[in-house]
Length: 136
Image 1 (spheres, rainbow, N blue to C red):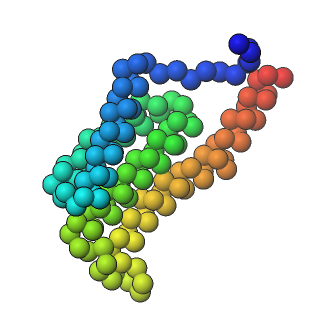
Image 2: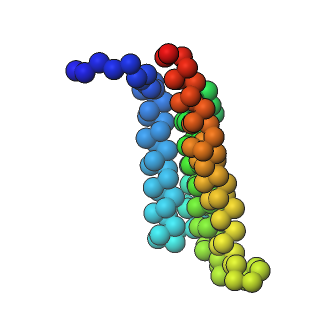
């Protein structure tokens, strides 16, 4: 095995199990959306979003993990809103100009994208620069 000076990110097995359960919740929510199972789809928002928020909280000390996990929280929020807009038929309701009810999902989608943009444009370059200073 090749040795490097790179740090290794590890997580406890119980935390990994929670991440895996999160994926199962998310899939069940999206399957419910696809099958138009309103009650189950809406019910699955709570555990899916709750675990995503919990994962973000647990990884808050690692800026890259926090940024990506917050982007996931906003993605799930946008996805859940979009699903609800289709379930209750206000996805095609015209809100302003050509924007419809489902287009409001762009707000959380964009928020997640902006978090990642900030991380890669501002935070990540700082981290790389700090790492270079430390290793010199």
